Image (cartoon, rainbow, N blue to C red):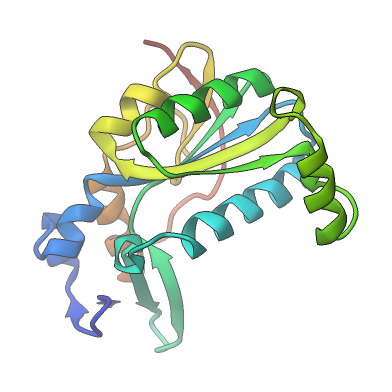
Length: 203
């Protein structure tokens, strides 16, 4: 069973066909993180956690996150899972992230970033270190943003970018509507693989 933002029950068929304004929007919107592949896996997960927290916590309109409440067969709740596809990409180096961040900001897309000055010491130390570091010397470890699929695809379908989709399967990331349908099927008890693999997309 799925529950919308207002506490209304949504059937799997509603979810797959996109009935309702919020669910219809979920088929067109996506959340994207682009991570620096030079960073080791453990610290990179920390970067991703900070990016997702900032992206969700600072969004002006929280209803845009489309958070769903999942219930399993025993009635236990698995709360606050966004129906929007979550796409994770990898960049070869910091300058690619810097350039992508600038392009997104040029068209007023909100971007959350994580740079090297945020990795050691407490918050006060990190704030001071960042303020003392010229922008050109910042090493970008990751950025995150969200928006409509048509707009974001023009930024993320870049040559030599490794792509991971939120279903964790190899190949082109599935359409948002298919991913929402997959979530609906999972809510009805169907299992799925959590294995991750990467592919390269080109323009």
